[in-house]
Length: 443
Image (cartoon, rainbow, N blue to C red; front, top):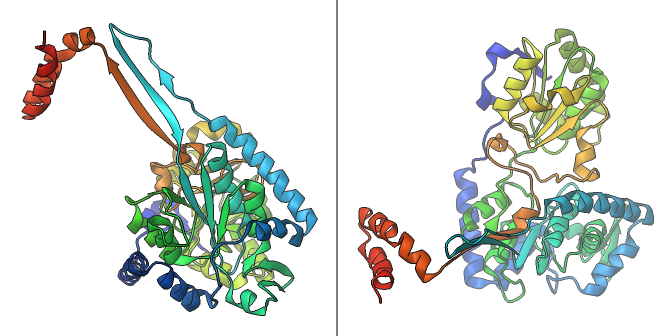
């Protein structure tokens, strides 16, 4: 049963907690990374056998297998993914940035160049669900950024692999290629990925970060994963870049008495089925709505295929907060900084300026969060656990680098030289000062 509290009883840390790994996860991941560094593919095969229950003769899918995945998936779903990809591409093309050159100023020319990252690894989780949407959301911005090589890593299914004939099978009506859901592979093809590898978990992150004989080393890793994947990304950061340390997916809904409790409950449960630790929060100024939503959650929850997961999430991480006003509701939302914020109010655009901290905002009663997960166009890789206070959704900029450049003529350096020398000497870095002096004192 979801708990209901008054706003005066709210404790921020009890709802959206920052992602902190346990000691056991941290040490286990450190051992996996060290083993991959030392033993490469040998260790990777051992971990694939241990954790995924299969041992492919090779980790990389052939280009024929990637292409064949398109034919293995229902054509209707292929068309849907293509339409979603078109929306995602159209939205992200607006994020393209170019460098700049400042006008020359007394012999000084300054500017900035934007260049793509050379090689990126996109991690796509496996487990109890399939995530072709994550492939589209990560690969398409990288493609738009002109990344030279996009690698997709996703864990194989041991059950699927062992039931297959020559590595191809069909489990529960889902076509698979070498133990990988064909829908994920097809999404990689649609999104423009260059290579697909059947590796998963912390070992996949380590292989991408450090490279093995079979897996090329990448420059940046993006994409969600479980606690072990997230901890691995934390530990390899600095060797490679990462997008973010994603925690459990969360949603916050602001609604008043005009909202339909059936829709509010459905949207809260849509997040709870992600995992047993996914928070779902309603903030409302209507006690009547709070009561109706609580009842509706109990009516809808037993009908969900993933009801056990959703039940644990709603009982342990769900909450209805009764605010004194809609203004206070937005203050609470800004404090919690949700990953997904739904504004289920009349004239929602009149409230948009009240939003300070949120990963993605869904305006109105016909813009539910799943629209953003799959189809609308904005990225669904979003800051979680309150990190929307300081971070942003995945974008084209995540796959580019900014490089500044400086040109000073002799005359320009002579003008600035005394200031630079004084600054260097104030910091006690006399060789810095000497570098300038050698040029400005030279006749």
